[in-house]
Amino acid sequence: MTVIRFQKYIAGFSVILLLAKLFAWYITNSVMVLTDALEGCVNVVAGFLGLYSVILAAKPRDTNHPFGHSKVEYLTSAVEGTLIMISAFVIMWEAGNEFLTPHHLQRLDTGLLVVVGCGLVNYALGKIAEQSGRKQNSIVLQAAGKHLITDGYSSLAIIVGMALLFTLELIPETKGRFLMLDSIVGIVFAVVILVTGYRVLRRSISGIMDEVDQALVQEVVVLLQESRQPQWIDLHNFRVIQYGNMLHIDAHLSLPRYYSVETAGKDIQHLSELINNHFGRQVELFVHVDACLPMQCRLCAQPNCGLRQADFEQQVVWNMENVWEDEMHRIN
Image 1 (cartoon, rainbow, N blue to C red):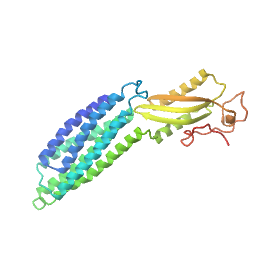
Image 2: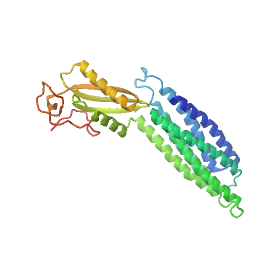
Image 3: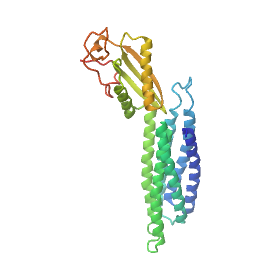
Image 4: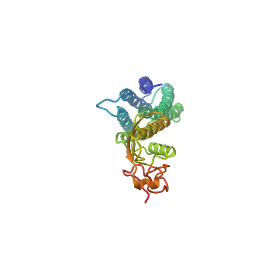
């Protein structure tokens, strides 16, 4: 299923679930259910924002957006994270007021059934969305999935709280004595929601600021080192940026100085195919080819070189610490 189609399902289900949660809140007047309903409001906004972003991100690059439109996913995810955090503060406010002046609840049994159904749908949809987002490298789907999963866990805790409160209200000796439990559960899960919103917002800001994805860069560097050819003498000024499902890689590669443009082009093509085959996504590779220098002979493993001025000693092993440097490596 495509990202756009999946996001349409998320947006559609979010509206249906919101209406169900608002109904449950209306009949119960419970802060716990209000917590779920506010989460549902955020889901609706995030669902349609996400749909807009994946449609825009799918557009091909143009003269105004030479790197494509995929960064819009970070922006919409940042909005979603902010909305999640705002909803948490609203829940805290309402729960605090309710804690000070608790009131009797009603029809908890019907509300409980509605919340159970919504929670199951949210969790299932969230797991599928998160897995699909990882598979298709969509930050929007991953953010939506995490949010829906958290919503599902929140619903589970709310279900436990409502069931406990419903049971206590049935017992004459405890009826009306534990109404503050409604507010306490709401406050606890407002904190959980707040942390989730912060994580979504933090990741989005990292993407907007082109913060290095250490795990991704490490994976690319290990791949190149393990597949290294003797003529790939040196790799430096190496950068990796991920925009949606695309990788943009910049690097300087030292090749034997007697190579023709055609021969060097074949090595660049080999690099591109190697990375594309490994990651299963589109890679935009910008490689500046450097002609090797005499000082690099000692770290060059290329056999039968008629221009060699020093015996080969050892290669520089490419790793996270040395490939980003903006100068050729050498043996001191």
